[in-house]
Image (cartoon, rainbow, N blue to C red):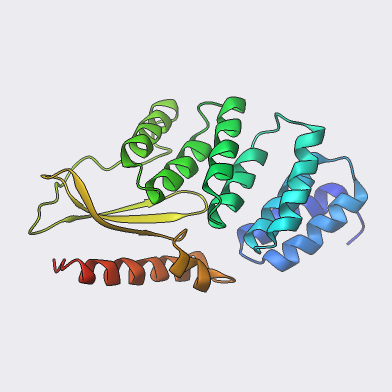
Length: 219
């Protein structure tokens, strides 16, 4: 293909969406070469590098985007996701807050931030963000409000954001989460590299099942 910016940028987006991240990285590099000042392609490159867990390269690229355009939507969220996956909780929190300062009602950011807070055990704060996202864009975030869980038959709640999956076993009568697992957990992170989302979800399920068994949950 000729070094046409739009062609290679859209190709990179399509390849990234299809899970072909290494090829997407090559395509976006060609797009950047064709138009070095285009910040959307540099943001995409940062996202792809983050998915490939080349974190320092990703953060360097994203910091460059912030320096050029501090209020560009998505850049702080992408940095937050990288920090969260690496277990840098304070840095992740700071970046999520910066993204919400750019767009307080962005449903993608609210969903990702909620997943992160769930992982930290801050369920009330996470629920508030989910409700906020649902109010801002009805239908964009699904919040389960029916089918109560009990000690004998706890409820399984699955929440997916664009980049993460979080699963809880809940006793609604006591108002407690019995066990929870997500792809941010250390045991899942070790095995997720290079895997499809469906395979990562299976790893989360296996982690949850082990935790539930250890807690004596049988239903």
